[in-house]
Length: 426
Image 1 (tube, one colour):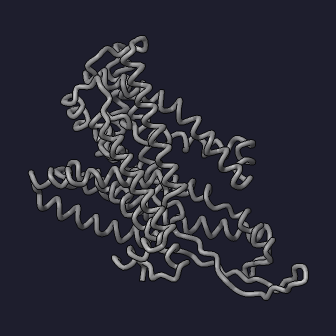
Image 2: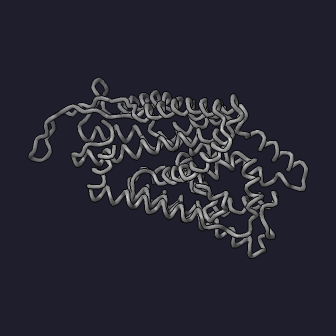
Image 3: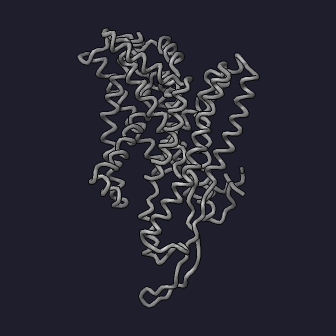
């Protein structure tokens, strides 16, 4: 392991990418420590302690919410904007055509996502401040005509945009997915305080139960990340110009879980949105509105069976959704046909496309089922052991941390293998 890390640092380009990631994570932690004025920290801590979903949002922002820092919203506006844009690609023909135009199309869609993130961040900033005001967390006057409120909205929006920029820099110039990496860094940064809380009030039985589930979850996640279905590909001999290319045989690897950790992030973001929206109206003067808002908040209680069921099916659904977005059987079949490749026993063209779609659907079901089971396992343990408290939130965190670590190691492994270094996986 340490020898592999040394090999990674010996390669100049890998070392540069790792150092860029570390530098950007330092910037992220610095932004998490820059507070926005006008908040009663004691009231804010009491509110987060009594609201598990906002406690999870605080976990994803690396404690930025509990400090009410400039990145208190985290990447939630950007994630919601990404979900909206990906859904629109399936219903808007112009966006669907744009997504098929290669690098240019992807860059344009990314640009539209950035534009959509700005109003999403402004809307969520206003709503979040309204919620804090209803809970007597704000020390000043909450009013759009107030300079303090406008300053807070502008600061929170700018912080969310800055965090989006940091995430894109990690994706472009570093290693791994920037969104996942920032959430990973936020979760890891909360580990010392979680350990300190557990040591202050230890519960051995709950800790052992959660430890067993955590070990099983790590094993299942790694098993899913490494699992793949190899489709044999045969290339016929072909002539191009004056050169003749000899045929050969290779394989097309289809991963059991091609979506990685993204479905979990999407599912949590979707579950947070209605609760966040309803929480704004719990203090409404109209009794019907306030009652309906309190009902929605109670409906999405993380300790309820309904929440677990919705979380389970959302994780499965987003696994299929993101897999369909990242792997397109029609494009793969067309690429094989152009290069003279075919699957033995399957005719090129539409039959190959249908075959690949059928295989991906079957193996994705296995990956989605495993991922959903692992996602809800901590909540089920929390129902069996109510004393777990905040440790129960660590289940989702564990999924993200392990997936990000495995993905990063695989990318470094690929870079090392290109340079004939011995990698992590042996």
